[in-house]
Amino acid sequence: MAVLEQIKNQFVEFITLQAFDDQYIDRQEEKRILEVGVKNGISVEESLTIIREVASQKGLVVERDAEERTKDFLENAATNDGKVTKKEFEQTVALFKKASKGMISEPDMKRRLKKMMEDNGWKAKEGGLFGSKWYSAIE
Image (cartoon, rainbow, N blue to C red; front, top):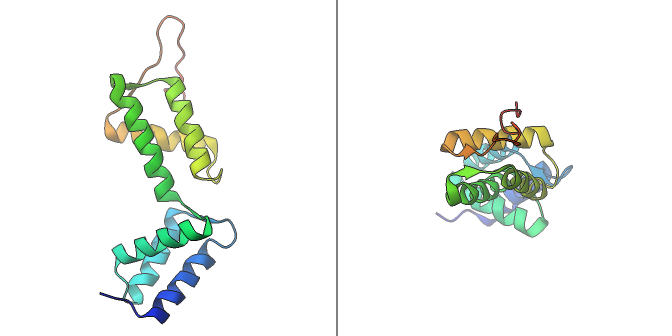
């Protein structure tokens, strides 16, 4: 279903306004944007497409997309031997930081990545004779 051009233009302006101060659309802002889209007759799928188009055109970060890129990287790291090493985890943190333009604190990133690993059944490679408990230390 095609959306009237005027409604779409207003929706694009609303998206831009939501990210105006920090160039970042977190999950709460994204949900609010989707709700406004639905109220204006725009489907969730079409709203998501418009959000991504606006983000791409204006250099905005969508938190969901940053997390998905990070998840793909972690999944690849876990696929090799079934475990994520400290080095791979730190590389993932760096990727997440870059993808989110530093809008998420490092401790929060690590907690999210740990939860992502637990949710997907990916294990951490830690310990050993000289190893540390780097993964267990993440709260």
